[in-house]
Length: 453
Picture 1: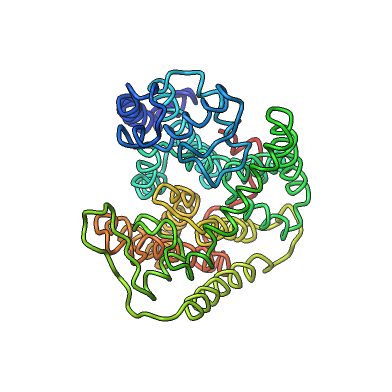
Picture 2: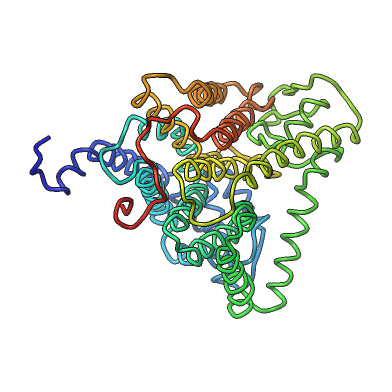
């Protein structure tokens, strides 16, 4: 490349192919989303709606329109296990025709994922240059789950962006804003609260303050003003009843007929139940039973096994969280790498701790995939050796992707195993941040001059 090539031209030559592919891919999926949701906005019976098309965004749109038309929250259209804020958050989409809204939502989601890729590259690549092989590898390894999220029309890519953008802001020492993003994410799905917890353990009190302020203003004050105190209180009570009881790990492990047994749900409690007792996870009543259990044990044993696994995961994650000095910002490149790896471990814990984990939740581990791929590339370039643990974790993650074509493998927890593997790799990186890369280029906490996209 010529030395006098303008920065903008250098940037486009590097990222142009990826952007072009994303535009073509997004346009195609937006058209599909619009076509799948066309001709159904007049329907009022949810059974007719479900028979006409499949889309989470479709359910969000109908629920928001119901609020706009009648001023009432409802779970009639399949939107449950969400806080009252969520329907208000989706309300602007209901002013658009459903096909147009679905298409634009798909484009927005893909755009947020593209922006997430840029933010991650700006941090891990020490600036935004050409996309490296590590970037392409991370995108490809996340793509099946990104595609599932786009097709279903869920909010996983928005959550991913909020979590990664929050970390980007933390590395730039803008902690109040980072907390606000995490608080917004928690109002959509509670999962980002795990990242807030991690940062509180690291004494990032302003992050906690920003998250708490957002939760109070958008989660309590806004719904009370827009709806009423009674609707807000009832909506939160319904959410707590659903999240803390009906979909809880204990209920999943002990109920005679637990909810959400479909093999696409690969949460830890559901996988433990499937493996330890005959639990049918087939899709469609006409199909034969799909059983993957290796034994049949009573409920107390299932709960005990789950608690043991959860305790091991939580204990190991907390051990690396409190390892090393708590001062901020970190004053060595090894500490920067270690904290990024710990953040990656917590991104995996988001899913390992969730009572429900669908395929379209898994883009939330994109930071982990990018971190491991970055490690492989840096070690290879600096030492001409192979980073065995990160590379092995990525290969096993790829194997879990292949298993998506096998319902029995999904029911037995192959995607969950992929999450556990990359989580373990992050723990390994967090405990040995400079063991394999003493000659690698210097890494420092990102600043506004070398990492702003």
